[in-house]
Image 1 (cartoon, helix red, strand yellow):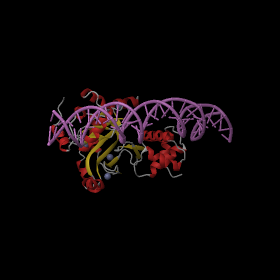
Image 2 (cartoon, protein in one colour):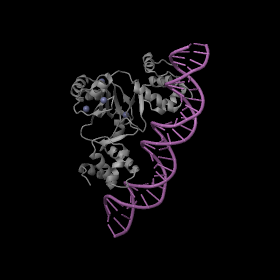
Image 3 (cartoon, helix red, strand yellow):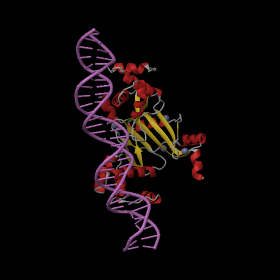
Image 4 (cartoon, helix red, strand yellow):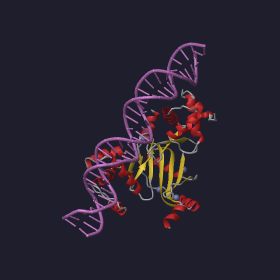
Amino acid sequence: MKLIEKEIIAKLRRRGYKLTPQRRAVLNVIAASHEHLTPAAIYERGQQEHPGIGLVTIYRTLEMLAELGVICKVNTEGSSRSYLIRRASGHHHHLICSGCNTVVDFTTCDLGELEQKLSRKTGFKIEGHLLEFIGYCQKCQKVASA
Amino acid sequence: MKLIEKEIIAKLRRRGYKLTPQRRAVLNVIAASHEHLTPAAIYERGQQEHPGIGLVTIYRTLEMLAELGVICKVNTEGSSRSYLIRRASGHHHHLICSGCNTVVDFTTCDLGELEQKLSRKTGFKIEGHLLEFIGYCQKCQKVASA
DNA sequence: TTGGTAAATGAAAATATTTTTCAATTAGCA
DNA sequence: TGCTAATTGAAAAATATTTTCATTTACCAA
Ligand SMILES: [Zn+2]
Ligand SMILES: [Zn+2]
Ligand SMILES: [Zn+2]
Ligand SMILES: [Zn+2]
């Protein structure tokens, strides 16, 4: 059994949710990954943490955790949603190659000012953003010009 | 038959795609809407433009148009993807409400400097970007606090 | 114009994803 | 320890998407 943030467990309890081994398993799987995971992927990895866990339970737990704000739903291409643990920032940054689909992450973005401006203008309460640059990596530029 | 941008048609032709009435219908429906539409919604409205059009054709056409960059896929909660027409060229900006899936466009972004920096650092030739802010619109903030 | 031809279409079936239902099990509490 | 409401998993249902394939059609060349 791996470590789960005490805070998260406390949050569950405060809301009257029971802490079942299945829920621990889902939390462990998501917390251990630094990538977005689909329910199916979580199901697969969850089998190692709690053999026999059902896919339905995965769905239910994900919905609950998202509602608690512990994890968040992410947009992905592909035909399934995915989730990741909510870390402090709310930033999702990618640099994607149209040629080979390589994805590079980057950290800085400096969108705070724009975010505030939009928030004032539209009344939105903004909680995060997704910033993706699309282009061609060095390798694919070479291939294209060859 | 409503107006479709000549540019878009030219783009199809350049890529060797045929211009069928079904494709015109899908384009008209998407161009006429200022909201993002799911394939099912496009199918429904498409019936008025071209009775008998099949849902499969909607899916296929959407995929093609997205690949051409004419429309783009949007992240929404809910269990279906959705699409809207791509208005600005390299820029693609959305402000999305997690509560009601409203999508608001905005124009300025000032990502030029970051784009150049990333380009230098990674060697990517960057051709565009997608910037999505996620949050809650005024209406949904009220509902949540009620 | 008029075929010829590859691309595109629609129906149906196959797959994939998500939700609902319900009987059996279990976490948390008195 | 035993009670009870919450939770679980299997199966079925509901949705969403993709594949297959025979038929039709847009477009080009003659
Ligand atoms: Zn950021
Ligand atoms: Zn590449
Ligand atoms: Zn921009
Ligand atoms: Zn809203």
